[in-house]
Image 1 (tube, rainbow, N blue to C red):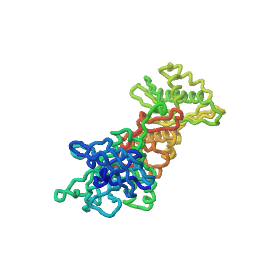
Image 2: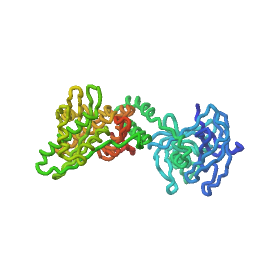
Image 3: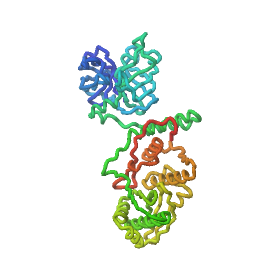
Image 4: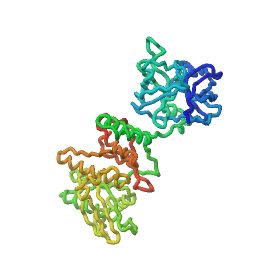
Length: 489
């Protein structure tokens, strides 16, 4: 089924005004200067006709528009033929991606409709002293084709195609005003049209990122060397753009920030001995909370927490991070300052389970500790032995589909990063072939990764959200910017 792109005519059907395209059963778009005057904003052609290559014609009436941004919204007053479909709108373009525009240049005779093409040079540019516009490079314009009559044509990108804007102007050559300078063309951005008229928002369709990514993969696999590297960069840029388009914005009660609990104490003399003792008491308190809260017939329960310990003089601060709200609530109720320090210590003696301690806590790092509880045997193991000895087991992005696995991943990085720094080393973490994970349900792991790359901050806990109903679902709230020139993932 063809896209509903037509020649824009006056009401009589005798005067060629430009190009227009239908965006819904009742709305169409064209450039304002095709039906009105730029300077005064006066509408010259209130009633127009769209003539399609199929032979069909539909009547339309000017509804509203903007002579500055140069777009006009038309009300379609006759039924759209069944063999034509509206053109979807797209609110974000990507620099260097290819485009094509379909329209009716007056200098071309014969074709039912003419396509021009090229690439999108700048998704966010401006003309005439600050008017937002998309800058394009048009191959046909660069080779001397007059684009008069293409005004109002949709700038089509992606597969399936959608309009990221509409053609409005190309700077004229001084020696031949009917021709443009160097293939430069400017378009009115679709996002400004949608933002100015909320009733059009439902016409902006999601980008088929996965189809585009998967469509490029066979080419990627067939290439090597510099060309492969360039396409890999394009794939990653496209994936960043996907996340920017579909960025998660947290709203309660569906999502809440990751539960955390912090304890501040003054530990006085012998800080190292007291510190180890307090960590042991805290771990036993977490174990007791798991024991009391886990009413289950399962043979084993596993709980992952991150523990961050910081000392300065005799000041001692520890933060516990867990996806489990109930466990953080238990710590709040049973630890200082709500409970006296002596009462807190004594309470851990009431543990029914026998706790085995196999962990190391790294100062100023997010240290992962896994609790493995076997209720029937009354056994509890608190450990990060494997995270310390064989971190590669946990540094696999494909594991990060649950909150606990993601915390384990980040904690393992944090712990080894801090240990390397204290030894004067530069830690390096390599995640290979991550382009194969773009459609593996790891969008929020990628949002975190791009945040780390762009900000050099490992994690911002205020950006990490967990499901109110299922805390093992997580979202990382970050809108990626453009692909960095260096340091790309």
